[in-house]
Each structure stands twice: as C-alpha cells, then as structure tokens.
Length: 371
Ligand SMILES: C[S@@+](CC[C@H](N)C(=O)[O-])C[C@H]1O[C@@H](n2cnc3c(N)ncnc32)[C@H](O)[C@@H]1O
Image 1 (tube, protein in one colour):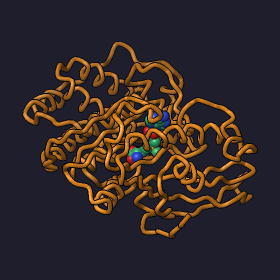
Image 2 (cartoon, helix red, strand yellow):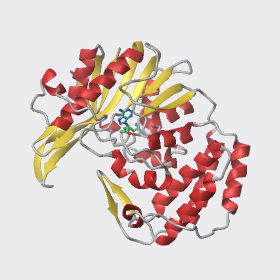
Image 3 (cartoon, protein in one colour):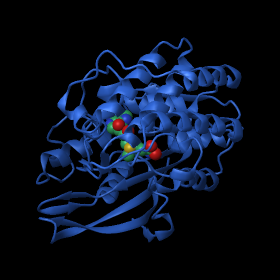
C-alpha cells in the first residue's frame, strides 16, 4: 500500500477554508472538509456535467454543493435529519424574487416577547434570557411562512445566528460554555439572512440535479453501477457523538425523534473484528469497521467500473492504542474489490492519555480508490 506525504492537504481536509466561501459558510460545521478539497478531486478525476458524484456521509453538504457549483450532478446521503436539512437548504434552486419578498418581511418583523421560552437546563445555560426570547420569537414567525424554501432558508439563518449569539464553543468532542457578552441575536439574524441572499445572487449557480437523501450509507437507495465518483469523509473513529454536539440547535429548533449518531457510523455492535483479524480491538472499533465494511460494499455496488473515490479519514485514539483507520479501511476496500491507488497523508498527530502520555501516532489521510 502506497502512503504519500501530502501536507498540502492539511488545511483542505478541514472546514476552515469554508469560513470565507459563500453558501458553504451558511452553517459552521466543524467536522466538514473544504470546498477546495472537492474542487481538487473533481479536477483530478476529470468529472464533467455528465458525471454523477456520490457523497454517502453528506454532513453539511460540501461535496454536493461544490459539485453543483461545477454543474455536476450529485447525490448525498445523511443519517442525521439536522444535517440533511442544512445540506438541502444550501443546495436548493431558489426563486430569488419570492425569497427576497420573504426576507424583507422577516427584516420588518417587530419584536414581541414570546409567551414562553424553553426551560430545559441544557438550553438555559447557553443562552441569555434575551437571546432565547429573540430566538423563539423569530422561530415562531418563521414557522408561519408559507413557502417551505423561504421558511427553511430563514430557519437556517436563525440557527446559525442563534449559535453565534450563544455562549457555546464547540471544541472537539465537547461543547464548552464561555459566558461573555455577545451582540444581540436580532442584529446577527438580519445581517445573516441579507448576506445569505447576496451569496445566492452572486454565486450564479446553475440548476443541476442535486439530491440530498435522509438515509443510511449502509443501504443506499441507488441502482447498481450508476455513480462515477465518490468524494466523502465518514465519521472518525471514537471522535465525537454528533447528536450530543449538535443537541442544542436540534432540540431548540426541531422536533426530530431522538437518535444517536455516534462517531462509529451505526449502532450495530458485533464481533466483526475477529473476522478480519482485529479480535483484540475495543468493541466500538469493531462496530465502526463492521459498519464501514457495509458502507464500502454499498459504494462498490453503486459505482461504475473505472469510477474514482476519495475517502478522507482520521485515525482513532484509545487510552491504550492508536488505530490506523486509513490502512484498515483501505484493506477492507481492497477485499471488496476496489483497487487502492494511494493513501495521501495530510496530517500526523499523537494520541495522548491523561493529556501528556503519548500512546501512538495517528494519521489523517485521503484514501484514493478505483473500481
Ligand atoms: C465527517 S462528517 C461529513 C462531513 C462532510 N464531508 C462535510 O463537509 O460536511 C460525517 C457525517 O456522516 C454522517 N453519518 C454518520 N453515520 C452515517 C450513516 N450510517 N449514513 C449516512 N450518514 C452518516 C454524520 O451524521 C456526519 O454528518
């Protein structure tokens, strides 16, 4: 297996470059990768308007949105209703006149104190009373909007603004609370929706078939051999539990059924490890690779012969060991039938225990595959 140091990708495998990318930056998703990473592989794989790109772990929709910006068809699968929502709002074709009318209405809303605000502890401790009143006032008004595209657009603007006015700071696997003065939500919200509209007007994105499906990558609702390329990053082993990190925005603004989307991609925990020689792995690692194996098999089924795949993946840290997720995933892909072209190593880091004791090195890499 060929490992190539590719430090040029160090920043591109993160969300950071998206902070200044119109539309991509509508919602801050720390676990996302950059538009430029997708641009790079669109070019390298020679994709064009006839291609269909799959993103089986869609997240905040970076791959489908970047494809759309290049006029390339794409389909994204995302198991979390919240992230599926974010991806849909970012990739829709809007009627700009209709949307502008609804934005103007939203900007003219005169604040009235809502009858009640949520009392749950996890919400109350991250917002001031006034921010929460603003958030609920705007949420209730947005829900009255008839056009569902406008409604979702404004709601995403509100969610991003509310989180920026909150005392939260997402820091790896935890949400920290930093009680310091924040500008009023009203101001953020009005600025945000105007800016989002400007992005749409300026971006000049042509309508192209872009599907975001609320679904599981281990069971893709696609026909065999229909996909030309995959550009994706599965959740990283043992890193974060998405439902916990994004619990504030989902519980404040939605009524989704409670579910867990852990850092391992499903909830099936079995003895998969022994089958492929990892019998001493922690149970969560076995479950992760078992689920990854199912997802890879599905990718193989839906990919055309000659299709190209870029899979961004990070190593897993446990108190007693570091796990090489790039190599193991590439081996699973090889067993399924893919050819492993190369593993580009974007970043090396140490796993530590008790903050200082080094237990092993992990890589963040891009696995390049071909069917
Ligand atoms: C690392 S993030 C992907 C980020 C994405 N590339 C972006 O730029 O926004 C992994 C995503 O996979 C989703 N996920 C986890 N398990 C899944 C599954 N079984 N099927 C589909 N999506 C899943 C998570 O909810 C998360 O949004």
